[in-house]
Image 1: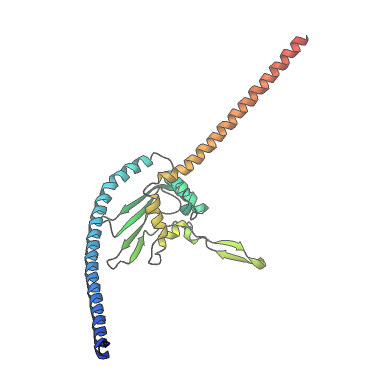
Image 2 (image 1 turned 90 degrees about the vertical axis):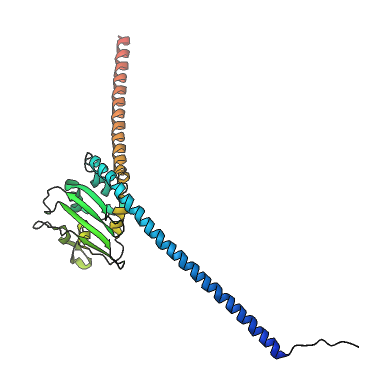
Length: 263
């Protein structure tokens, strides 16, 4: 006599499926809550790390400054150091027109970048100039700061241009189609000081602070190498010239010797 396999009622099977699903949901929910707690722990560590990093940065801002001062004293012994440093930098040189270059070459004496003491909220870039026919200022600066809400902003020295010498208000005529002429206002490097920016990162300021200021010598030496190459070429030309002269003298002596033998 064959035995029949008993089957569970359909209703009982549905109850087990619901219970299993609820168990899975409960386990997932518990895992999510645990992950969230772990993330809170990580966030607290990140905040602590930021505070510690800031303390280290504040410490080294102060430690670096005496070295920058010693470097500045040595740079004063090198004529036009900062001029060549800027002219040899591809991004800065692209912003300097002929008038800007003239002002830099003849009157710029020093560039300086100084972080705010807290090491966090900003920095100031200063350009020092000799007495010049363009403006009254000895120092022109632009400062960048971060507000308590995290918004960037900048403030600049007002440039006291002498009459008729404002490089930011020049006009030039250029030819356009149809024989007409159009008035354009050439962009000057000094326009940057009056540009408040778009409440975002200041690219020029960051280039000077992060690229040039930490090691300006690397850009100065670009031009120095070129000058050395030119000097080497001149020396080679001079040596070639002396060789030609010596060869000519030897040829003359040989001709004189042959003439005496014929006699």
